[in-house]
Amino acid sequence: MIKKLFVCLVIVSGVVGCNLNYQPYDGIPESELKEDIIGLNGATVGNYNYLKDSYYQRNFHFFGEYGGDNVSLSGTTSDHLFYCYNYQHFPAMNTTSNFWEKAYQLIVGCNKVILSIDDSASDELRQLKGENLFLRAQTLFHLTNTFGRPYYQSPETNLGVPIKLDDNVVNVPARGTVKEVYEQIIADLLQAEALMGSERENVYGSKEVAQAMLSRVYLYMSGTPENPDINYAQKAKDYANKVIDSGRYHLEETEEFKTYFRKLPEQNTETIFAVKHTIDVDDRGWGSIGSMYNHIESQGWGEMYASEPYRELLDENPEDARHAFIEPQYESDGITLKERNGYPIYYINKFSMQEERPTLSSPVYLRLAEMYLNRAEANAKLGLNEEAIEDVNLIRSRAGLSGDALYSTDDLKGRASVFDVVLEERRLELAFEAQRKWDIFRNGLTLDRNYPGTHEQGDALLFVPPDHRRVVFYIPEAQILVQENLVQNP
Image 1 (spheres, rainbow, N blue to C red):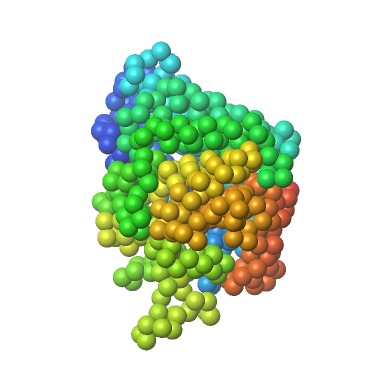
Image 2 (cartoon, rainbow, N blue to C red):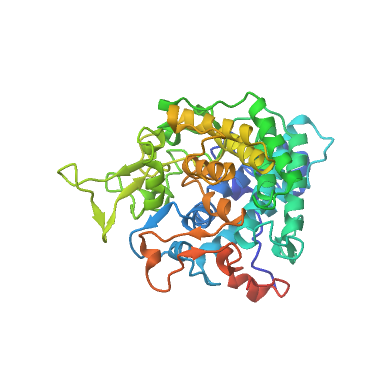
C-alpha cells in the first residue's frame, strides 16, 4: 500500500506563485535535477512555500500559542483549534493531521535538494543545500515539540517523530526517540552553518539563521532551573553570542518597535528569519493567523484575546511599549470595554496590517530580542545572574522602561529568582509568537490557566503539569491506521 504520510513532491508545483526572489521556471525532469541550478532554485522555493501553507503555518501557531497562558478564547468554534486551546486533544484532529502531512512534504522536498548537492559543489549550490538543511532541521524541531515530550524528560526513551532523510515517498521510518531527533536537528544545523554565507536576506536561510536556531534548540535542551544542563546552556549562550556579535541585526528603537510586525521583513533590522507573505498572493484573509486575533474593517473573526494574567503583567508598567500590540475595544463612550460572551475584548495585532491589510503579515520565526533572552536564560542556568539581568534590562529599556522598572540582582521586585525574572520577560516580549507553551513545559513548570476564557467550561484543565499526557498531541490517527511501525502517544 502506498503510504499516506508522504506525497510525492512535484517540483513544478512548488514554484507556482513563488515570491521569495528566486526566478520561476518551466520545469525540468527530475533526472536532470543535480545538474540544473535553476531546478534546484525552484525546488527550494517550493520548500519555502510549504512554510506559508495554512496547513503548516496556521496549525503550528495553534500548537505553540493556544495551549499557553497569554490568550483567552471568547467562544466556541467548530475549528479544531478549539481542542488545541482547551487541551481536549483527540487522534483525529484535522489540525495535527494537516500539519503532519505538510511538514513531511516539506522534509521530502528538502531531501531531494540535499541529496542532489555535494558539499564540494559551488558556493551557490552549497548555499542552497544549507538552506534546505536549515528548513529540514526547523521542521523536525517543530514536529518533535508538537508530538514528542520536553527534552529533559527521558529523551533517550520518549518517542519523537520519524526522521526522514531520503526522498522515497513510500519509505516510512518508525518514530525516533526525542534524543535521536534532536541529534539530527543539530547535525543539520551545524552543516547548514558551515555551508551557508551571511549575504542572504532575512526571508531565507543564512549562517546567522542557522546559528539562531541552534541557540533555541540548545536552550530547549538545557534542562530545568532546578536541574540545568550546563553544557547545553553554554552552547545556547555561545550561539546567541554568534548572532549578536555578527552585527547583522539591531534592536528596533522604541517607537519603531511599536509597529514592528506591520513591516515587511526586509525593512526590519531586528528580524533574523521571517516567512514572507506578499500583498498580491499571500493574504490568507479569514484563514490567516491574524483573523482569530483581530477584527478590522469587517475582516477577521476577532475571537482570541490577550489573557487577563498577561494584561495584568503588562499593566505593571503602563509606559511599556508592548502595550502597542494589544488593542482594547471600547463602547462609544470611550470608557466601557466591549465584550463578547461576557469576555472583555482585547485584540492582538502582531499579525495584522502589513501594507495596511487587516489580515496580512509575515510571521517572524527568529528575531534578535530572542537571542538576548536566550542568552539571559542560559546565564541564569549557568549561575551568571548579573549577566542575565543585564540582558533583561536591555530588552526592558528598548520597551521604554527605565529607573525603578529595571531589575538588579539586589532588587528582583518580588520575583523568586533571576530565572523567574528572565522567563517573565520572555513572556512579555515574545507573547503571541508561539513560544510560551514550550517555555513553560521545557522548564518543568506547571501551566496555570485559572483565568477567564472558554477553556474553563466543561471538563476544564486549568492547571497542566509538565508530565501531563496532553502536553503533546496524538500522532494523527490517519497515519497510525496505515503505518504499522508508528506508535501512538498515550
